[in-house]
Structures are given as structure tokens and as C-alpha cells.
Image 1 (cartoon, rainbow, N blue to C red):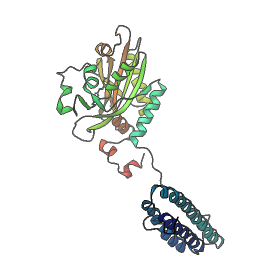
Image 2: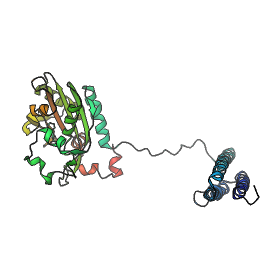
Image 3: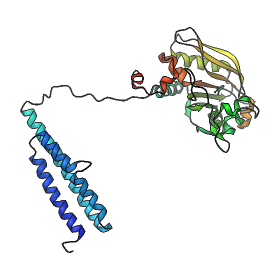
Image 4: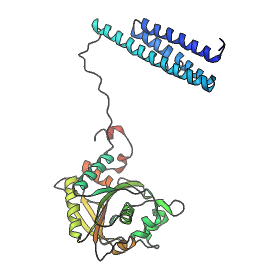
Length: 335
Ligand code: PHE
């Protein structure tokens, strides 16, 4: 190895960098001097250590290995010297009475979960106590799961391109979490007791109670002897647990192709002056059971789909759905 071998030169310079920088850190006699030394040697942008690291690129693979290893060692010893120097200066300041160690420390600002995530977590917890486990399905869904298997005929107005986000090749952004009912029943035999929580998409005009994307909680229970009375009981118990004992909900006869009979469920809004739709529900239509290979003579089931934003709004007295998406920290901090 001759003395102008690039690796040897680089290693020599690294050596002297180590000596000079440690000397500078040890010699610093004030926090300002230490900070200046830190920037000179360990600075992220123009520090000398950084420059030494860039040297790596000029070496051949074998040289890189040797130099890289040595470089890491130097970096570690510099960082150790910096911490030691900091500690030394701090001890000295405490001893001189310059630092009052009895002062309260700076409290770091902690973030927390978004109110919608909190709501979803609480719903999972609540339905978990009723024996429901969590199922999942994709947001990009095929037409079969979003419509066909749910007994929604090709001519049905729910399929209108103006009311859906269709993608290419028979796929779409799901417009309802009822898709997950189908996926669960395709994958397992009864009995079934699941909820599914997730985003759904509809090209609605945004206003205080509508958005083009929102969240639903879907519930599905299938077994021998499941009844409409069971559905009403579960929804009432749920509403009382989540919204409070004095909450009022009502069931209105309605229609969905995948349930028969069907209802819409309303809750009396905070303020008590108006009813707001919480979601839809009903007894699973026999055609849906047939589409997934369940025998409608053997089992019955109920299903429901509720809007999570509205549940969260009713619970917390929020009057505009848009507040949930604006990420204004002054709003979010209140939850
Ligand atoms: N999927 C329906 C909707 O989004 C709600 C629903 C779910 C109705 C389950 C009945 C049963 O409007």
C-alpha cells in the first residue's frame, strides 16, 4: 500500500478529524462554544463528519467496507464525546446555581386519535360485548359485491352512474359496507355475528350532513331463529349505550333490495327538535342467502348499516359534518 493510496489518505484524514473534533468538544467551556463545535463537526449540512462520510463515494468496494466501518466508529465516539461534554457543562451550571432543577419541565404536546377513529373504536368495543367480531372488505369493490349479490337488479336506480364512483373493468368505490355481508357469508357458514367498519363513497353534494366519502358500520347476524325483534333490541341497546339512556330512536318502514322487511332508523337529534336518519336495517332477503349458498329455509338473519359520522355528531353535539374533515386543531383538541 503506497502512501498515496486513496483509502490510506482517507483513513489518515478520518483519524485526524477524530482527534481534532474530540479535542474541540472537550475544550468547550460554555454551551455556546459547545454548540459551535457541534455544528462545525457534527452539523447535518456542512459538518466535517458529513464531509468525511461523502468521501465514501470516492472509494472502490473493498475500500468502502474498510472506510465505512472506521467511519461508524468515529461517528459513535464523537456522539459520545458530545453527550459527555453536555453533561459536564450541565453539572457545572447546576453546581453554580445557574440551573434551577426544581422548575417544572416542559410538557410535550401529545396528539390523540381523531374523533371518528375514537367513535369507530368505541363501536367495535360495544358490539364486541354483544358478541360481534370485526370483518373487513376492500374499498375498491366489484359490481357483484356492491350490487348483484345484494339483490340489486341491473335496472335499479341505485346503480346510476351519477350516484356512484365507477372505476374501470367492473370495479367501483364501494357505496355501502353491505358488500362485506356478502364477503363474510361467501367465506363462512352460519352462524354469523359480525360488524364491518369502513369508508364508503357517493358523489353527494357536500353540506352540513353529507359528504362524498363517509364511514358506515355494518352489522350482520345470521342463525336459526334470528328475528326482527332481535334486530330492534340490538339497535336500541346499542343506541342507549353509545348515545345515552335518554336517547330516542324510531323505526320507519322502508325498502332495501337486500332486506325484507326493511326499516330506516332515526335518532332524535341533540336539541330534541328533529329526527335524523341514523341508517338502514332489516331482515336479510332470501335472495341474498341464495346468492351466497345459505339455505333461507334453515337460517334467518338481520343486517344494519349506520352512518358513523352522524353517530359521532349526535354524541358530541357537532352540527356540521365538515368539521370532522377539516383537521382544524382547535376543533380536534376538544375530543
Ligand atoms: N346499505 C344500506 C345503505 O347504505 C343500509 C343498510 C344496511 C340497509 C343493511 C339494510 C341493511 O343505505
